[in-house]
Length: 557
Ligand code: GLY
Image 1 (cartoon, rainbow, N blue to C red):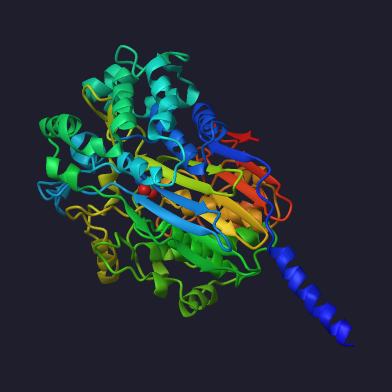
Image 2: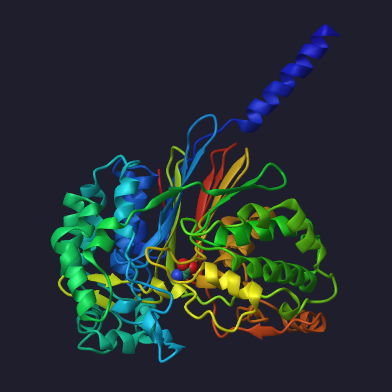
């Protein structure tokens, strides 16, 4: 009897040890939106770097090969997993841009009206960049010198690369804005026109700036000659940057949003100034209370859309945590989640107008995302942005630095909402040195047995895309299926259920209309998920890049 009891206890302890034992990833992976950036990250891993080294190499390579998506003149968020024992350490690096100190709530108002083009195109649209400072912050956890991690980017900028269809499509969309800025036109266009397929893009000025950062660190971006060049160019073009704004810029290490889900899973995601992590967490918590997994396609889509409708409504209450007291705990409380879940009707869509109003979201949809895991189990998921394609389409002469138009992520237009909406908009209004609210939400799902990373560009659709990929993971699908999953989207306002061409068949669309949804087929596919998976029991690791993009996932032994 005594022996039996002993063996039972022993077995219990052993089981829990086995369940939590960890076999390190068999392979490291780098998954980015561009093959040359994935190659740069893999090179860093193969030359003895860890996931952070690969993240630095990928960040800077993407700044060269995806000038429409991210760059030194932009910002972003890095979610990091350090494989510390007995539990992993999660870090969140907020390198979001900040409003210049001369910015104010009426910055884009002319003759009593907000002029949207002013926060989209040109120097006045640019906030103070965060990526160069992020490189220094990441470097604290890197194993290789900054100089080595930036070599791939420097070579790509110096030697150039042939532009592809994605580049041409995006340059085409931003053609007139690029043509309006002489420096951008000279670098990114061919004799002022859309380049031919295969045209070779070289960026010698950007190579020079990258060399400076490689030798002197990211902080050198914010001082002395480079800062003077940027401030002078911005001011001459009608912008409001000052030397002090650059000197004052700081990244923030924030506590990641961490939420317990069913089955011992944790969601680790972006806290404010991103609203994306909260939207994602609310959605997962609400869906845990709904029978979405057993539902037939129309009902499943309905439950997901109704969940998104409610979570996106709440995102308008969030803003820069250095300026406002965000109600994150309240939004994720069990009372609030239960009330939201209970308000979803199985057989009827709730018109958004019947939910209390929150502000309309207005965000750019060009950004980039990458993911890295090394063989020690350290990982990075990063979403980086210039906001719109090619940012503000304003390049600082002689530097190759294309500036963001992230100021457009503030709520510039406070008119037209009711009291609740106005308060919600108010929190994200333009203020000096403030970070605009974002949807970027690099995310991890971790349990004792597995780890997975998610993320994508796509403006306001980022949280819904991350949700769909995570749901595919929870259903036991493979990483290739997570990224390929057809996409549907609801963001509360406008009150419509959007779907990618082909994502919903005609019968499902009809059934959703019956439920009261305004179903809308979108004109094109969207998003560019880059994901990672690590089975901690077997050591099997995997990654996948969205088939909608040209990105690749490369592995390193
Ligand atoms: N600019 C896109 C975002 O921050 O969500």
